[in-house]
Image (tube, rainbow, N blue to C red):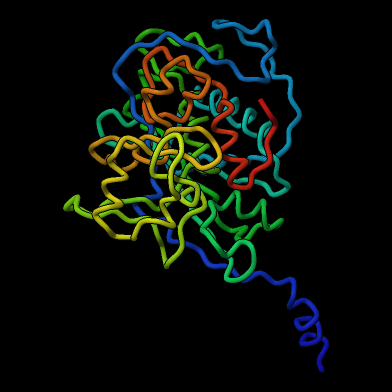
Length: 326
């Protein structure tokens, strides 16, 4: 036996064959929208000193647990003032998420031309062909973390695009003192990065609004495996509903979705909203000023949320992340 063949045979039990989900799947693009309302609230980072109040900026007191690498779109000129809010959001997540594999985020700056949309994020998903990671599709940063290696070092883990049309209304300060007619950019980036790491999946509805879906090649996304059809307690959707069915659509538009094991209500309005439904927390149950309001689908003027909150972290831990507790 040749040395190369012997090496392949010896390593065979440790080789994980994986496959990638297309990055252009519509259901994997998630948006944050402006609500049009004003809510002067501030949720500081858990790593901020206890003396840190709205209008003051002090260094975060935390230990970096993961490496987040930011690449700025070289094809456009991104305003320099964008960098500080992005750096703060990056620092907060790097102190929360535990991973030995660097997470690479591509940040763009473009006119999105979609009204109240502030930003959107697209992420790729991966699934092993055999073994523990073969039961679901995982967002690439989480897949890498669980695998213990970068499955595709040549690609970004996700792409985050900020809507340049809102440039004049973004608040670039880091102190949470967002003026009444401005939107806190740190909050926007922190929110969109969470879609990159966890709040993403395959739920979508057909053009005629008659059927809903959640599978890709016969498997759900890891997030989708925990969705239940009633809040606060119900049946797992992926086990009890047929992919491509009217019954599933009713659940997606029933305003009553929950999360298994975590008492969290998901955003499921009576009219399905692509990019907003399912992969956010409910806007009414977690209003501005609530510690779990970061991952709701809308952001108000003067609202600043610099921490993911306990429910968000519980969801991420359920999916496989290790985090720094609140």
